[in-house]
Amino acid sequence: MSAAPAEGQPVPARKYALNPWPIAFTVTIATFMEALDSSIANVALPHIAGSLSATADQATWVLTSYLVSSGIIIPLGAWLSEVMGRKRFYMTCVALFTVCSFLCGIAPSLGMLIVFRVLQGAGGGGLQPSEQAILADTFPPQRLGMAFAIYGMAVVLAPSIGPTLGGWITDNYSWRWIFYINVPIGIISLLLTNHFVQDPPYLKERMEQQRRGESTDAELRIVRTDGSIRWIRSRGFPIKDANGGLSRLAGLAEDRTIQRKGKQARLIVSQH
Image 1 (cartoon, rainbow, N blue to C red):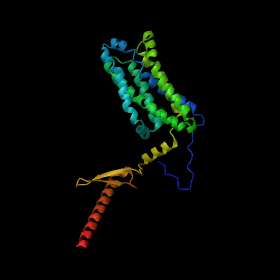
Image 2: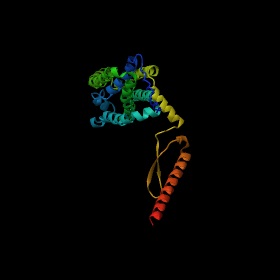
Image 3: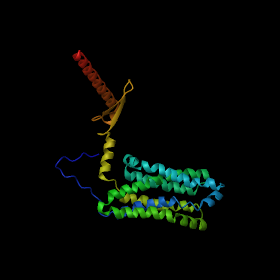
Image 4: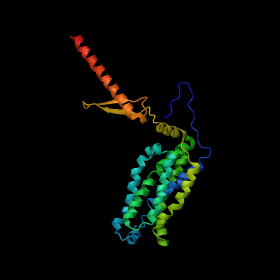
């Protein structure tokens, strides 16, 4: 993280996009696609079960696997964005979702379809939290309400029209097309994201610090032979030199322990 400005110096203002609406449209179409896929397969389950020689109960795993996988990835979105970069993580999620949508469409068996739906949910789970973070860094505070209103409209409208759209596609074409329709939308989203979306400066700086191996707030635990756990703030020890840093910290902890025991011994002697 960047160092805090010195006392008396003005805090630099955050820069926002001059025209944030193309970015909002770019990230909203992928989120709409992901939210649509959470309900579009509902009415197609009997067709999926009949086509893949499965029971109705077995076919429900097509829905359950997607929702569970997506729910697991959502809490990890912030950490993965810091590790990979928000733009790279978002594009990875869109690409994974798009590829797995195509694989779901060509799945030869129910087992393969469930596996592809798990992977699809893993890609879709990172889209919604990433979009919210991108919108928060793109729009100024006075326009955030309108930005998140568009986001809310997408995540509410998509599951509402999903069953209707899925039923129409299944009746007129095939249940496989409820997955194929994600492919062109995903490709368009990837191209627009690559052109419009950028990581904010503070995130780029944080990632650069991590690449250099610098950490000013890292805490290292040293477990001593007597079973006690001592927390030592590590400052000035690069992560890339972890072995040397741990050795020096261990030596520092041992020196402090010896000094403390020496003070206790002198205190006992002085009392007698």
